[in-house]
Amino acid sequence: MNPGPDLDEPLFSVSAAAELAGMHAQTLRQYDRLGLVVPRRRLGGGRRYSLRDVATLREIQRLSQDEGINLAGIARILALEERLARLAEEVVRLRPRADPGSRVFASGPGGRVVIVERGRRVGRSEGRALVVWRPGR
Image 1 (cartoon, helix red, strand yellow):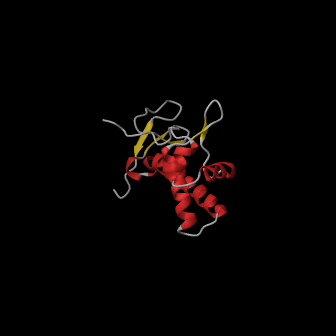
Image 2 (spheres, one colour):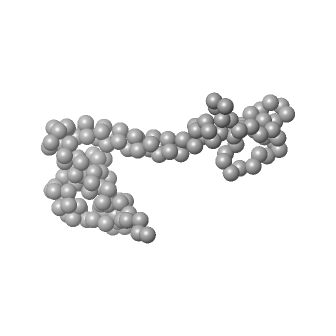
Image 3 (spheres, helix red, strand yellow):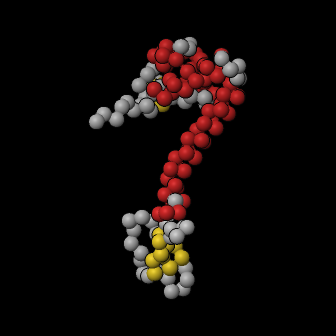
């Protein structure tokens, strides 16, 4: 099964990315200087834009032209969207630990209680009593 194209692979030169985004190449260079869309660099220093970069350029253009948002506002929106994506990934990573139906605890002779990750055995230092918590039962 083909997972699809790598959205972050640097494929396009400045002129090709500008054409795909419907912008002038100088606009892309300005956005690079401002940190809005920072392409990867080739060994010689040439910029290479990814499909994700082109999509971001199109979104910048939409926000600017259709919504009337200035570049400082767009920079803030992009930063918040990036933060939101990182937080969503963290929620996915932490969700199994927060699911009360899947929590397993171990407790040792000293009373220390630890959460045992699914598929992990309890070590002697963590305890010998094992408790599966199923609320509401």
